[in-house]
Image (cartoon, rainbow, N blue to C red):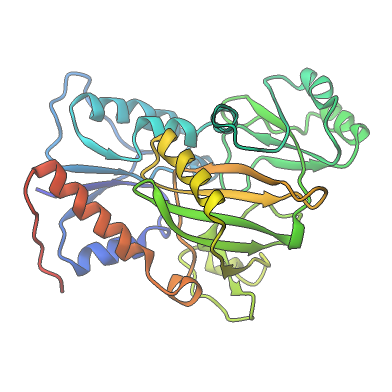
Length: 327
């Protein structure tokens, strides 16, 4: 029997996690949430811990069926008392940018001014009162997919007329102010167990919305990074990164977000609005890919901390200390 079941579909992102589990001789099994089934009357599965690593961006990899299915399967597991890392509540937020912003509104945490629409006929009215440029982003995206920038209402009208607006797999979209990034960077903070783990500044040209940490190819000093995935396009994405520790206030806000959303392992992104210096939080990620070549960027291997956390959760589930022989 495997102690841990890990559900994932992207073939490269989680290799460092698997390597650390194998190093410690911790038994685990994997499942593909895009090709899976369960019986409604089925008994509790044999594994002790279920780690949900399903990505909403799976629809870009012929895995569209995995997203909503996973919500159902997580409910099944939790109904049977299985300890799920990034469970139903967390994945609900992962699969809705609108719910993420509603959470920020509830918590009194600043975010880009936004509207939620479900039909292209509503976009023009929704854009009224927003400062241009704006972005229209699919409610369920991932890796920057389904986001387009518009500099004027005329550009918006033309896109609507030509049916070029991507509403994504749940036919819902956000109409949102585009935030010019002070310093040319956004900040991503990774959390583990509801607490701050590390922060990074990601530098971009302002036109790319794919800020996957595992895909970053250089440090700000020009050092090439060994990436977890997508190595073929490494010279093309232009993303650079450096370690950064945010203020205590920002860390406290981020910990509130992940604790309220039930995210065990996740990253929060924020940006400083170059127009007025306001800190705006804009993305809540329950599927957290750690930065590429982390030791060279932040000085430690976050996958070691992650497996420490998984071991702690196993001990809690089993009610005893679980000992595995490290290689």
